[in-house]
Image (cartoon, rainbow, N blue to C red; front, side, top):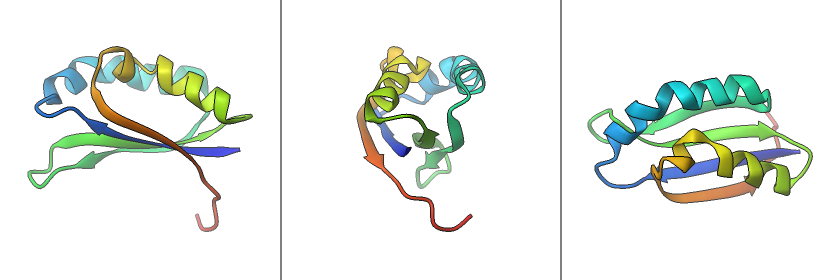
Length: 90
């Protein structure tokens, strides 16, 4: 099951993102369930959120993954949405 994890960073939280980026990327590599991922960019080209597509068993597994993301543990996000997603192209 594919789940899109759509996040929005808290205002003025770029440094929190940068401070936890290595741990976040290591978590992605270690868990092995991320099909694709990348940051959203604001008008100035700065990272301000994320889109992560997971391939997991169910929504509970996606929620567990999202809860244990180092970015989430660092309090980076203002909002997190998990949405089932169907891959059609790509």
